Length: 158
Image (cartoon, rainbow, N blue to C red; front, side, top):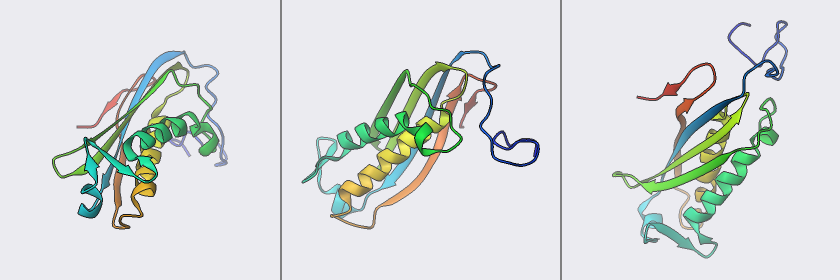
């Protein structure tokens, strides 16, 4: 079972023991991309969507940050972490897709990729939830790790 950190020698699920690891600064950025059809995008005003439920992007930012802080409660074998910071940025790209970047940082014994991925994912789901009254043709296209630093190895997507 080598390679899978959440399986013990007998193949059973286990939490990774980080007690011997060094405390280091760790950072991770994840991205979710959401396609919004024209019937939703026509409600875009000053870089945000305003609905009866309120500001879509501002609500998604708050939801993403709240979710990142709860990652250890949502994913069974993740360590509960107290984030040092979590920032969510929402922009439209040249294809008129919503690009959500979530960057989380911590000084700890374990990484923070899952917190960034959860933050970006929940921000995307919040956009879907707040816009679904306008159209169900919304597509959350992808969620992926963009980069991470700290721990055993750094990663940066080309």
